[in-house]
Each structure stands twice: as structure tokens, then as C-alpha cells.
Length: 373
Image (tube, rainbow, N blue to C red):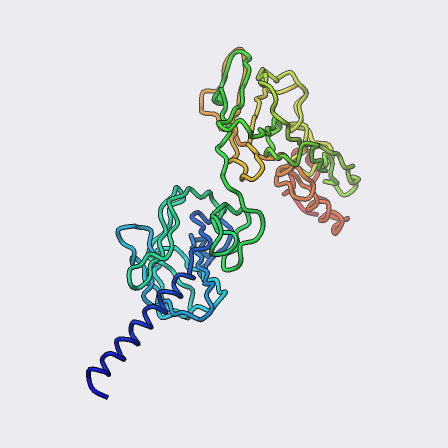
């Protein structure tokens, strides 16, 4: 075979190889992205990092050596894949963590992270052909943005991310903006009407007045158990179960925000110690504020971020000389018998059951950490 013919054969093989790689590369796609990972999925170091999922839906294995990932249109090869072969139907997870790890036998990490406020993600072939791109899109925390069907479908939000696996479950077309409040939280000296609104007239606004998180599935309320009496002394009986309920409401008209201080107390009449007869419950109503929390819902969309304000309406103004902080939390997180962090609950009753002869203490002001026998 002459040198000229041999050269032609080699050139033909190279061209064929390049065409084959190019055709196969067209079957590689960005499939799912998470730009703010708080608790969804941790890497091998236990860190909750951003991640990018690649899917290959070709017919033959393809080596990714020389392919580039980037978050910058001007630098398509900001991070380069190592000598790694991906199989048909395989999902490849790449952590966007700034850790820059390219050992093909261990989890891959890029040398950049992703902004949750939105930036481009690029997948580029070794010949500089842009295989796929994800345009700048705001992605909320622990929400992913992915394709359905995998690799070829439209992009949308997933409230149940599936890193390294097929995108399943409901896909949402948009993330709703937060609910707007006509008044900011703070101190007021006279009542007023609070209006809740949203830029999208088709949303449903759900709100609460009891500190709980608005939930369109909780319009009938959720009831939990608690106790106000515990066998603090060894001869005390076990107290009875009591119940409270927190409920979400459908917003239909402005809310009257007024001074509620003369209304009966609720949370101040719930025990936070293991006494059988707590001596610290207020005898007269205490000053009160109004907590309003709201969220927007719409079919086909992910519900909005939770928005909340606390209002103190006192005709004499604030009596406090220091800043006031309002914590907006579900009341059962504090007082529920099984999970509440602000009561003796099931833990104390279990301890008393296991230690019926122990004298826990004999002073009425002693909390659950009183003396032993």
C-alpha cells in the first residue's frame, strides 16, 4: 500500500471517528440541576453541594474525555471530563462544588458552583460544539430544574429531585412569587385592614393567624395532643391529654388587624415544665400580637415561598426599650406531646414510668432537672 493510499485510509478513519463521536455526543444532555442544596443529597464528604446530572440516551457507550462543563459562555471548557465512559441510559452526577475532582473512579466535582439566582450551564464536545445548555434560571433551595422525559423533554421544576436517576413525579412550569402584604410587620397604635395580594390573579392565597405554616391541605385543621400535668412527685398521677388545633385559611377579603390582648390566652396556658400544678400560668390575659403567614398556590406551579409578618396593635405603643424579635413557628413544635421541645412530654412520662419510686423534687418551682431521691 502506497503512502498516499495509507494516508487516505488514516484520514478516512479519523473523519469516521469524529463523525461517530459527534453523532453520539448529540445524545448526551443536561438532565437535572440543583443550584441550592440545603438537605436534599450530600456528597461523599457529607457536604450538601450543588449538582449537575448528565444523561446519555445513545445506543453505544461513549467516552467523555475532553468534554467540557461550564457556567460561563466565554469559558466552555472551564471544567473538563476525565477519561470516563458512559453507558446507554446512564445518568451521571457531577457535583458543582468548587472541589475540582476528576478521578473517574470517585465522584466527580467541578471547579465551580452554581448560583441559585440563575446562571448558564453549558455542555461542550471536545471539538467545541455546544451539545446542550441550560439558560440562566432561578432555582429555589432544594428544588431541582430538570427535563421530562429525560434528556429530550421540556425543562421544569421538581419538588422531589432525583439525582443520578430518572426524573419522575410532578413537574412544574413555574415557581410562584411570594404573597404581598399591604403593611409591614411592627408596632401600631390603631387597628387597620391588611390586604394580601399576588401579581398573578389566578393564584389561591392561603394564610394562617396561629403561627402555623399555610398549607392548602390543612383547611380543616390539624389537632395535636399535649399535657399540662405531669407526675413530678412520685405520688402525683399522670395528667390527662388535652388538644389544640392549628388551621390554614383561604384568603377572600382584607383582614382586620387589631389589639387582641384582651382575648383569652392560649400558649401561655400550656405547661413548659413537668409540674403537676404549674404555678406560673398568668391569671389575666397577656399582651398579644397577630402573626400572619401566607403562601400562594396554583395548579401546575410550585407554591410560593412562605411570607410572614407580626403585628402588635397597642394603643399606648410599645413599652419595650429594646428591639423585639418575633419567631414564627408551628405551635406543635413547642407543645406537642411526642415532639414538642418546650414541654416535658412523652420523655418525662416514660422516665416516671421507669422510675416510679424516685422523688423528683419537693419544691413547686423546680423544673424537670430537680433533685433525685
